[in-house]
Image 1: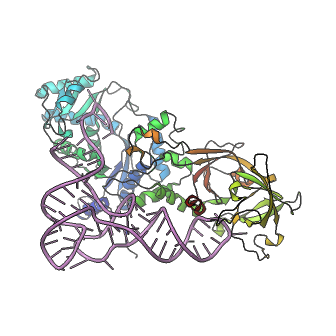
Image 2 (image 1 turned 180 degrees about the vertical axis):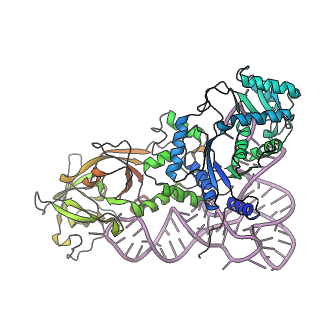
Image 3 (image 1 turned 135 degrees about the vertical axis):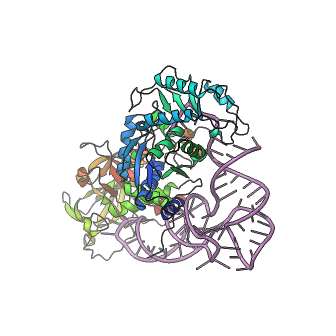
Length: 553
RNA sequence: UGGGUUAUGGUGUAAAGGUAGCACAACAGAUUUUGAUUCUGUUUGUCUAGGUUCGAAUCCUAGUAACCCAACCA
């Protein structure tokens, strides 16, 4: 029994509620509006809600908060369900706020009958004007004193479609001078002659968030309704409505939403990136969406670990992207198949190796012996990375340079004797001699080299397109900068290598497998890939101590 | 200028009056046929000012800062 992990404040609340017998078991819910794709911030809420229920033996509903027909679509419903399943969670019930429209309508009638709601004919401008400001109290609308009978008639006419959009609204009658703006007679129903993706044209009036969310929670007997900090002012109204309606008392709790460096998290901003073509779509691997991260090669496990590590609290936060990257590296390090690929090739010729000869050299598939071995063809002409050769070696350089020796991974030690430049001064060929006694696994040469580099036998190489991704924004917190957040987009966030050389085993690559291109990073097959045109995405780089060294200099 | 919420290393997050801990990041070293991994170590913190107490991140008082609230969005 090592030290137990301390509880977050919501776990404490749940434990107290369970211990005090307030509830026999808990029910949580994840309530997305189907008007966009889920992002990494949502996975924090998903892990929280599903995790809490799982930990304390409760259950979690998936409920779509579909009360605004003009922004919502089944396309989003499907993607949301898919993403939650992919993350590894199963909901107890798939529910929709729109399933409760009849019930919610009857709640509204009940409120009118209690004299706690009224129909207001004012324009939205007038309503806004009378609402006052945070520092000035509001004023009553002239329609506030309508009789219950008139309100009931008017509201039923609203439902029947007698009025146009915006002509009337239903408002809760609370207090126009309340210090909480949300309590100044909030609108609870509005007229929208719009087609709903589930209820079709049945309704032309729709409840507002505040008159649907808490009511849906209550209908489902949600014990702990968990949302983000910006809903704190809504809690007072949430409780007021439940009390007046005398329905199951669900309770709202709030936690701080996730923010991450070098990206944006608001649906509005993400939508802009998509519609204005800054990215290729919601699932562009540079996007912080679940679908983007999935396409980039992130594993569900790594995202869950990340959500676990960031914790749950009530203060504003900005999480380092490096933590997410750490989580995926940690996961992939133990599971990814090791392969060789040369992204920026230069020819290496082994002058003392027999022309036309091919050897099959044994190489391990992973850090764990259980992952097995494969055989790599080796020949006189190889591709290596341009960056692994320096004509004039830097300090602490232990890769290839004139006169220097390196090991070719799983093969031989070679010594650089010469190199050839093209007319523009670029290195064209590197000439080496190999040490036959230094064969990997049977090395009797007694030579110790500091550097080991990867390679591909030129006549046996396959080729592929490789897409390298960098952070989407140049600044840590684009939302906090002055002006348009899009001014801070990183113009180099995508680097496409049209023709990289890969070992031929990768022709058999499949989308579900993760690979480590040795020394280059973790990669996965992209959905754009075809049999004749392989496309790989870089999920994340490896840590690069040499890169740091170079930067320092 | 009203109301609400929050302040702990560079970033997150613990410590329920009693040793300020953990993770990421950074830095240094060891190992390494991936400058990866692994291992070891180091640096850095309680918003400010008072007070209570043997003892305060924690309690009290007064400040300060950040965020949220004036959609017929959620």
